[in-house]
Image (tube, rainbow, N blue to C red; front, side, top):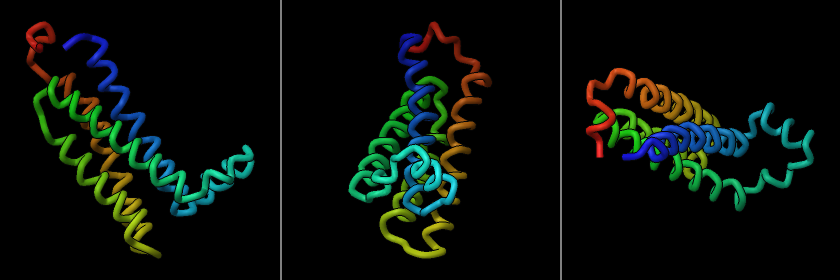
Length: 134
């Protein structure tokens, strides 16, 4: 695996998680996100027809990044935690309503950020030389 592929995998996981979390918080009506959108004239983005595809694409990018990094450090934990967090985030945004939706979105956000941090720290603990990874 080339250095560019490793770097893209590292960036994709974190960027996907941040984008999906911001879109989900927008769906949940988080005051800070809603006020930023209003202040910048982007309130039209608070439409589910726009936010749901953004969440799907962002989670796809994040999981792809976790998968690429899994191939480097050979640990599936962050990838599995990312899948669990993604399912919880989609459940909180699409299928649940009220307080349970906010709890699922919050728990999913924590799980996704934990997976991102775990994923970023694993290569530092890896004993496999980078030259032997193909």
